[in-house]
Amino acid sequence: MATKRDYYEVLGLDKSADKDAIKKAYRRLAIKYHPDRNPGNKEAEEKFKEATEAYEVLSDDQKRPIYDQYGFAGLEGMGGGGQGYSHAFHDFSDIFGSGSGFEDIFSNIFGGGFGSASSRSARDNNTGASIRYDLEIDFKDAVYGCRTDIHYRHNEVCSHCNGTGGQPGSSRKTCPSCQGIGQIRRSAGFFSVQQTCPTCGGKGTVIDHPCTHCHGSGLEEKDKVMTIKIPAGVDDGKRIAIPHEGDAGTNGGQPGDLIIVIHVRPDKYFERGDNDLYCAVPISLSQAVLGADITMATLDGRQITIKVPAGTTEGKLLRIKDEGVPYTGSSRKGDLYVKILVQLPTKISRQQAAVMQEYAKLENATTRPELIPLASLAK
Image: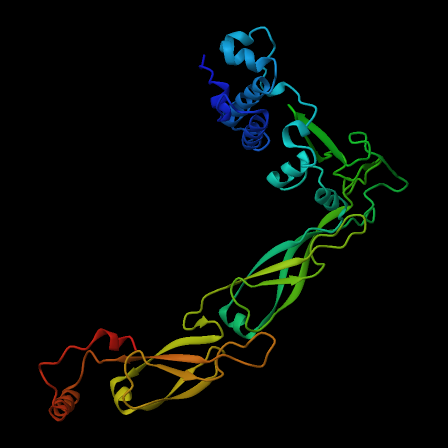
C-alpha cells in the first residue's frame, strides 16, 4: 500500500498556515484536479482525493490539533482522513468565498454550461447552426470571379409537423427530469454542477407524442443545391457568409448562416502577391542584347505585346500596369510583373559561332575580370 503524504505537504503549506491559506491552497488544487476537468485521468482523480482528504482534516478545529500531535494514527476512528471526495460540503461559499459564485468559477474553467446567465441565454436562443462549406476553385476564377453550384446538406423545418416536433393534436408537457427548469444538477463531492437536461435538451418541456418523421426535433435533413457568385479578386482562405442558408432554427428561430471557405488551386504559369500577378517569360540572347517586342498570353487568354529594352539582363522584372488582380468591389486592378529569363544557346551553328567570335573581338573582354561586391547584386 502506498505511503500517505503529509497533509501539509499535499496542500503545499507549512504547519503555521491559517484557515484562509488552507482554503486557498485546497481551492487551487480542487479546481486543477477535479474529475470533471480531467475525465479518465486516474492520477488527477487520486490527487483530488488526496487534497480533499487533507482539507477535511486541516480545516477541522478538532482534527487538526490531533493530527499535528499524533499524525495519521491519532485520526483513526474519528471518521476523518480517507473518506476522499465522497464527503459532501453543503456550503460552497466556505471554499470559494461568498459572492464569488461557484458556478461562475467553473463556467470560466469549462466554458459555460453550468447554469450561468450566458448558458441560460444560449438555451433560449433558437437560431440554427451555421454550416461551413469548403470550396476549391481555379486560380483564374479567384482572380476574375465566377459563378458555381454547390451541393450540401442542411436541416430544414420538418415538412410533416411544420417544425412543432409533435404529431397532429399533440401538446407539450413539463419535462419530468428537470421539472421545467431545463437543467439538472449533478453532484460530485462538494461540487454541484448544473448541466443542460438531456431529456428535453434545455427546453423545459417535452412532447407527449413526438413526430414520427423527425422524432420530435422539428427538423429534417435535406440536400440543397445553390448557385453562388464568387467575387473577382477573392484570395485563398477567404470566408464568404451567406445569411440564413445554414441549419433551420427551432421553434421559429432564424436559420444559421452558410460559411463558404475558399481554397484556390495554384496555377501553372502565374502566381499572386496581394493584387499583383507574376509570371516568367524566356527570351533569346539577341533579344536581350538588342531589345525586342514580344507577345505573351495573359491569365485570361488574351495576347498582349510587351517591349523588352535593349540590354535587358537575367531576372529583370517588367511591369505591365492594370493587368493584375481586381480589387474586390472596385474597378481598380493590380499590375502584372513579367520576369525575364535569358536563354543561352547550348548548341550553335558554324555561322553563329563565327558571328560570336567576331563579336568577342569587338567586345574586347578581359580574361581577368574583377570581383563584384555582393551588396551591389542585391539592388
